[in-house]
Image (cartoon, rainbow, N blue to C red; front, side, top):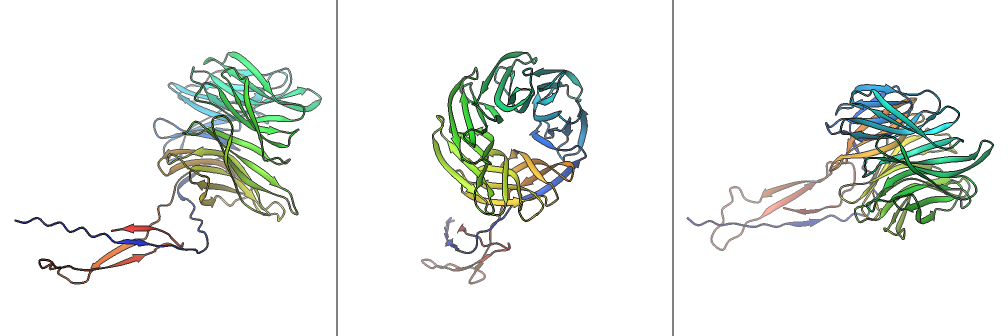
Length: 409
């Protein structure tokens, strides 16, 4: 018996200069909950999700069905901007109304959503915590803003570090005169912290790196302009940072663009990208690095000058910040995407609000490819010694978009 292996390689390349395609995402399911806004979402160990909302926390199964809803506090200032799963329950962080002012807030819950304890932090004036993170020592780090006085609009960035039981270990402030505040804080691999927000005296997005005690190591001012703000920051796989926000472009009319910036570990800018154009106000709220090294931004866009409805918006890039696809969802009045998390490769969950409801959406990235049919020129195929045979290859694009592929058969 003679074993004969025939290797046939057909290399076909499609190069197209047609209009850029916007492929978007494939929605798997959507759930809505009658609880105001949702600010944060995390996947749980059992495949479900936990959401931080106005006054409430929502625990769901893997399909987004609510298992329980726990409400703590009242209108209008109890808001839970961050939520974490623990070994035996959950921790929510945000801001609430204290005895005489508004304060940073931690709420510890068991697995059923019952409150075990809560702690408040802050100054004698109003304090608002907009972000929190679990720390390696089992405690928590919270960041937001604190007012200089009861009668002054000036604010500073306030950072509070706690132990696992909600006891204050230290606090620090950052900023200058004017209105400074933090929108996001994350612990970094060296034990320090990275903070993003806004600095009013420079009218710029504000990025601050601190040591483990909250002492400033370096800072960056970016996107100068009164409507330019950083909302989210994450440490990247290479030890640097990715920050997302929106930048105001002056003109008639003025408009906002999504702004994505990559820094190295010392705060040196490696690249920046802008997305969106007039007359839209494009506002980003969260960014994450995807498992393939790219990035995903969520927020909203609104034709502010034309009176159009705001719509939740997401945008996916490659590792260099080049747009791969973008999508709008939903298209209801007042819709907004606040947070996004990755579940698996190409699968995500995003949370937001529209029409007075909070909602949760699971989606996957599209996987488009052309169909390849290889049909032999002769049937049956008979190959004589030293002979050859042929195939005819047919490529079929079953989508409505122009596709560019290298196809190997």
